[in-house]
Length: 74
Image (cartoon, rainbow, N blue to C red; front, side, top):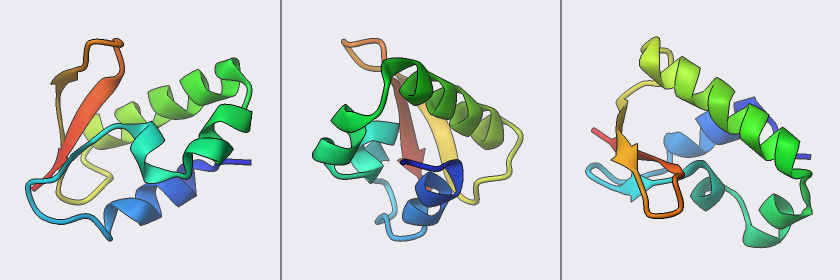
């Protein structure tokens, strides 16, 4: 099961300027195994943390063509 803490922890390993989506932070197999509603819930909570400034050096930069939120490590 993917956790919010796992996503936040993976952000520390990213390079400066790297763009990513929540699904990029975990193995594709793990992401696809999770129920869609859980993936949406985790993504929404991650967005809320980023907007509140609780995820260090990460900012929201928009959405991709699949309507997934895009982030960038600063």
